[in-house]
Length: 115
Image 1 (cartoon, rainbow, N blue to C red):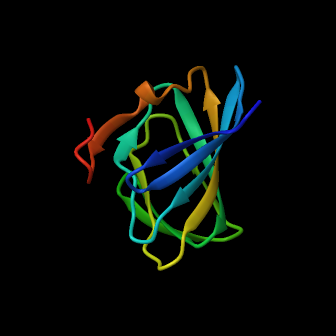
Image 2: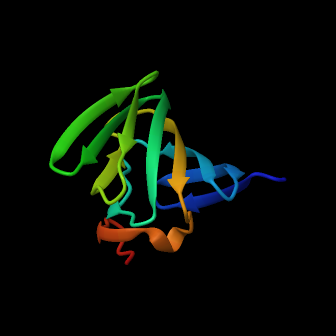
């Protein structure tokens, strides 16, 4: 299997594993970049920070995570990750649930005009 890399306005991600019961991505967020404020109906996520600093929105909370730290995103939780730093933020995302398609992203806010 070749690892698929997808470039986005905020950085890029590479799919490391895509199986029936899980999906694993290596996500790189450029300095000052952030993903959309979103939620999922069919998956939860576990984020493990490899490098840099993550500012995570989880429902009403803002939480900072650094290299070696992790956070769990429950099913249906409103969430976002952003990179407040001057170097790339790199983290591993492990998705579990019954469906892992990109169309399970419900965007509530997006800096890049995506729906």
